[in-house]
Length: 121
Image 1 (cartoon, helix red, strand yellow):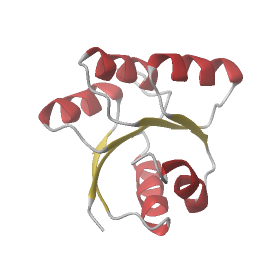
Image 2 (spheres, helix red, strand yellow):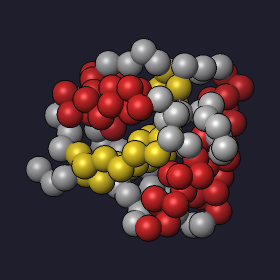
Image 3 (cartoon, helix red, strand yellow):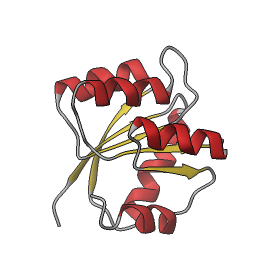
Image 4 (cartoon, helix red, strand yellow):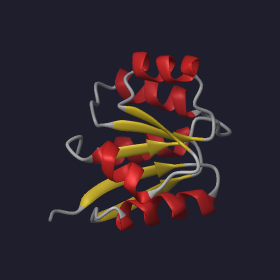
């Protein structure tokens, strides 16, 4: 199995660790680069385009949706998913229209990641 390069953007260090653990428990072999906001994450993307981007929606400095829009404006088509506590229909629609692959609600399970990511990455 190849190792997947993942950027995890969330203002909570604990949540970034939970996302990484869930990915590994779902059977994915990953190396993670972490960012506390969208601006930091965007710089990581510019350094090296990852295989997958996972982002919270609500973060300081640059929100997840603004981060997604910036990534897509650069022409980067990497699968991008939101892992967020808010999953309203409006947010889901806004995310998909901006180019997101999925919106996963917190709390999440390794099985949820497995279901969403199988065939996507």
